[in-house]
Image (cartoon, rainbow, N blue to C red; front, top):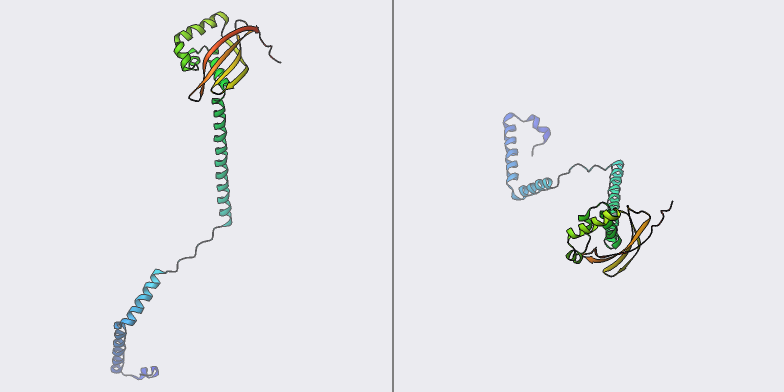
Length: 210
């Protein structure tokens, strides 16, 4: 082994021989399986586990904004669910209330919409009275006493799939008199329909409260 301090005193030939020996030693080390395998493992390990940039911390303001947005979304969904549920309860109540059908029936008569009024009759009633007969009958009532001016529920009772509703009907031709009409209703496909109407006696109309 040559001392590094003595390299400066070597002549060109000696320096060439020294460089040749160093290069030969390097090739020998490169050809050794144990050394080359260790170098390959070290290179592969470095490639599989690169040191990437550290994740940036989310700012406190951004976290607060995202939390507020999430809270608003949850509140909106909750309000919507409550509204849908309340609407369903209201609709179910309307379907289960025979007076709603009676109110729609007389509202159509008030407008002289006989076709719509006829649609609130039960299938049995429609089999007994055609729409043209119904129209002729109720348009005749309108000609004699005037159109239905007011219609008020006096009382109602439900017994299973049947119901009875008593109405006070005032026509425009005589606003001082009201006629009591009794309607019998039955349920068809969860809807209340009018199966019979009995025209009762006339009596003094109730005075509107001031």
